[in-house]
Image 1 (cartoon, rainbow, N blue to C red):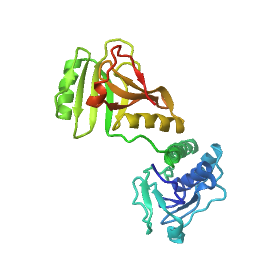
Image 2 (cartoon, rainbow, N blue to C red; image 1 turned 90 degrees about the vertical axis):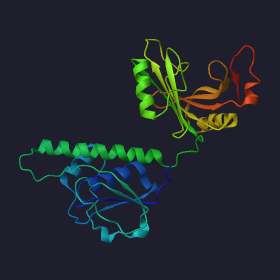
Image 3 (cartoon, rainbow, N blue to C red; image 1 turned 30 degrees about the horizontal axis):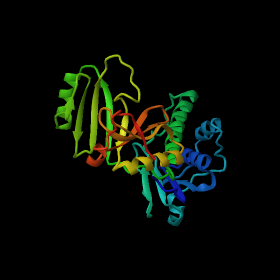
Image 4 (cartoon, rainbow, N blue to C red; image 1 turned 90 degrees about the horizontal axis):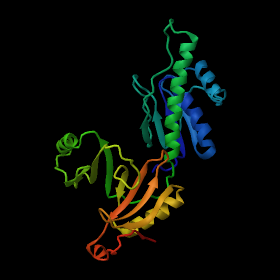
Length: 286
C-alpha cells in the first residue's frame, strides 16, 4: 500500500512538542528501518511536558533537540508529515510525499492550567500521534491482495420497507430484488452491491447476509485470493468453494482482526451455471 520510506520528516512550527513526540514514536516503532527527523520554522526547545509524557510511555526524547527546517537536507527526506492544527503549517521545499496529521497543540501559556491539566493535554497528543504512527507502520509493505471489482456490504435495519425507500433515494436506484427479509441494491456506477437485512431476531453468521465482501473477476481470482490470504496470515473461515443455493457464487470467507466476516466472491459464468450439481452441495475449489 505504502512503500517503506527512506526518510521521514515531522514538522510543526516550534519543533517543540508534537513533531518531537512524533519523531520519538517513529524511532521507537520503526527502529533503524527509516531515517527519522523533525524540524520547525521557529524552533525553540523540546517541551519538558513532551519529555515527561513520552518517558511515561517508555520513549526517551533526551537526545532530541529543536531545529530549523532550513537545516534539513531535502535529499534525506521522501515523506513529510505536518502536525499543525490551527497554525499555518511549515513548508518544506523538496520532492516528497506529504501527509497531514492535524493534532491540537498541547502547549499553552494559559496560567490557569494546572500541571496535571498540562500533562493531560500532552498525553492526549502523545496517544493520538502514536495511533496515527501505528496505522502508518501497519500500511508499510502490505502484501499483494485480491483484485476487487465490486464492494459488498450488508447491514441490519429495523423496518425493511422504510429503509428500502431511504436507500433507493440515497443510491438513486430501486432494489434489484427483495424478499420479506432483505432488499438488494446493485449500483454499477459505484461498483457496489448493498443489502439491507431486516433485524428479526434471528442469529446472524456467515451463512446469512450480514457481512462485508469484495467481488473479484472469476473463479481463479477467488482461488488466488485464498492463497494470498494464507500467505498474509489472514484468518480463512471457509476456503474457496462454489455454493449453489441462493445466489450461486465462487466464494472465500475471511475474518478481519475484529471478527467481522468478509466474503471474496465471483459470479458464475453461464457455462459454470450449467454444471450445477443436483444435490446443490458446495464444491471445493483449488
